[in-house]
Length: 365
Image (tube, rainbow, N blue to C red; front, side, top):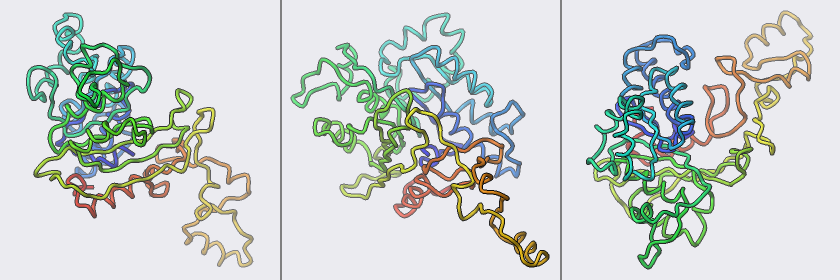
């Protein structure tokens, strides 16, 4: 959903600052590859394979897509997955996003350099300056960790959101709060971001300063409420995704009043135990029906062939799973249309909204 809504393009740089196993970067790669393959008139076979991709696809992965995570095990997993996707593994770096002041300790370590130097050299080219704080990325997507507070005064002193309303620094700040400010440092003016946040950040009165901080620096594009089961079994925290675009005279001129897209996920996608719920034929009553008795076999068979309805033999057949074009199960959700196999969802509704608002990044869909 986030990738479809932010609509990354081949010429744009993208980073995930809390990458984990690199879900956002991988789906960004596939999104752009689909456009490239379509433009070159190539069949879109299964993209997640080691088969040879067009040079444009490989160039995009190697030069435009980046990821950072402070957990080394997660980084190793992500690099392996990205290697399968087209040698993007060199741009997945083991760094602490929030503590950029100490990046030089990593980047000067010989063992670290042996593994990550190729990606680090490319990341440096996107910096605004040499202190590793500000960058010029077009797109950022992240699902930062919610658990735990940052208590180190040395780190808190680098953040505006580390302060109390009276200007004094707090003794501890939620990790996700600092990620909001840090992520905006990664974006160039006009850059856009999707970030998953606890629902409370959007409506707690005590978090008003956070919302004011965001509104001063960005246009709030959308807020999408996720179902409480989405991140189970890892956490049952209710979350929403915030979409913003940094103010910029050309790409996103600052205005005082503007519409914001709001949506709430209705389909849970998982059960209460955290197991995924998959689409079945019975979920499409207009598309899959039990084959009716045919009075005139010749005429009836012709009508069935011409119909857009897919007929099954028995009610039990309606319990069969619906598969995508790669014979994979499809998770039941309403976030986006899955390759034309499901109905339009929140992402498609947002893109229609974005067209009406003439947002800078939806001219090419």
